[in-house]
Image 1 (cartoon, rainbow, N blue to C red):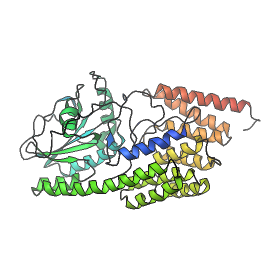
Image 2 (cartoon, rainbow, N blue to C red; image 1 turned 30 degrees about the horizontal axis):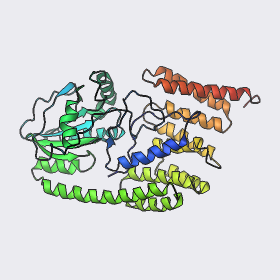
Image 3 (spheres, rainbow, N blue to C red; image 1 turned 180 degrees about the vertical axis):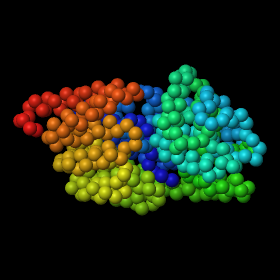
Image 4 (tube, rainbow, N blue to C red; image 1 turned 90 degrees about the vertical axis):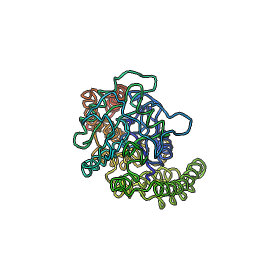
Length: 418
């Protein structure tokens, strides 16, 4: 299981009024909640401004959701599967009932969920390879707060599915405004994070879990008729025990981070050794970089450059976060702005989707390096991209304009040619 878990809020603006400490704290929180590799149900409406939470590939997203009730789960392996009560079937044919003998993978996701975006191509592969015996159904949930009973979220889900195209090539539906699917499947089974998958055969729930953690093996056995639920329970019990061990170490790391960052880094090395998933190692190593900045900046920059050339080479999100920390943390004694610029430019080059917020970081890096002319040039591109994006956060536009004003004022005070 991966220890990382950054969700899909738009990346935060960098520059005036920013707090580097928030990103560091947000990283810790996301790491803890994602030890199970799922995106937790967040506590803000999807369209609410993302004041400072980093996002894109995997960070708690700005959406409120219908959280599971406190009582124990009523939907378990062996239970009769609930039906489909959705607002709209967006892609593929409507599933009216579970056909006897056919296997179904029912996966719950959201447009704002970073981990969900990573699992979608995998589910497409499953749907293609097992099309003769398996139907994959993706149901969008938690797109609105519980009190919101409108269907204004539907166009957003439809647009997301359309943009994914063949990368999301299976049946897709959107939950009702009353959260019927979230209630009868997710809440009823005690699932508090997405993505979450259910395997159903002959109308009975056979398996519940993360689509990237055991689903393939269980699915193959269920299709073949050799599946033994007791063995899966044993496997999950062992995995949970191992995860508890990781959580204990991580808890010790977070406690030490407040008092002795050097000791925290030593403990973190133990966790890095235990972590098997690449994404988890990425998060933990970037976290180590954060810690090292607190007790040995020179060594931290050396370590950071190793990461940037190695495991994080094509990881735009983590390079973005590292750049933000260097650029905005006033506690740093010798911030390596050239390194921050290199990180930000690499992040912008490898970013999936709209990279205007990341280019905003690039512009700020140039500003910090004293190249105001280049900062203005980059910021002009940022503003054009924001204005052309009908879904752009108005707060980000305001921030980007403020940064441009900052750069232009600095330009006025410089000698010609700067």
